[in-house]
Length: 270
View 1: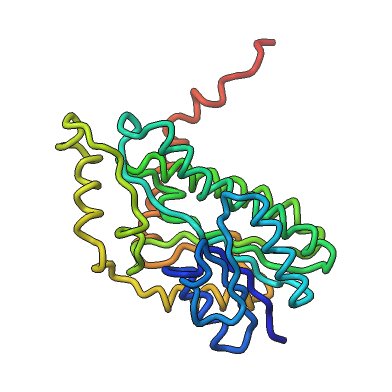
View 2: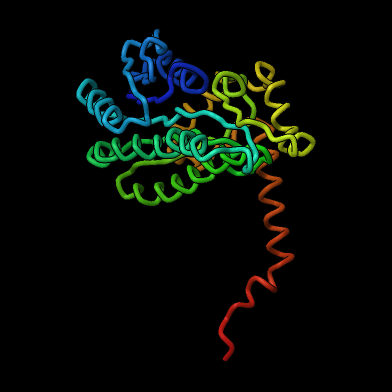
């Protein structure tokens, strides 16, 4: 049975790759973007700025009215921001969270009544290896993606009674525009130039267009997850993501073991 997909940020990157893969196999794709012309090639393109609640509600309503249902929601719209905590302004942080976190929240909240009513659906949230491993110099982005991970984990438990599934995708470096036009940079402070934060700033500039992983293969993996009867809550993508996430979890377990005696010594004395 073909599916109806509702994809945000479908004009480029993972959003476009997923939309193309789903459309190529005969599914219906509602491709949304801030400029619907940038989603050319998709017959069901809608204007959607995820920071605009009225647009979110209107786009979801239009998709349901046109196709009768939504089977897969891909919360892909987002961007990066390089900068150490001290370098990132309040305005930059708020703008990032408006898209990467609150935009996902708005879209999810808008589609949930429909998914609950039909008793099925799959919500895909595009996170990042940066949603598990916080890189120095990428603090604001990590904040947005760590929050997205927590939201999605809680959401999975909330919507399970209606047969709605949730998967958080955690890509490593893929050859999208993330390190190019989709990446903002806070004004640098000289103090961080020779630190890990400064190194990351330079590395992002150098890797644009050279990332080792193929977005089309990421899209194919996501389609396989959507079709699986027991999909995972989390899906790292790319060997770098798998390696770094496994290393982070191992270090956490080691640290818990090392500090367990102190951590558990919290009971009232009897």
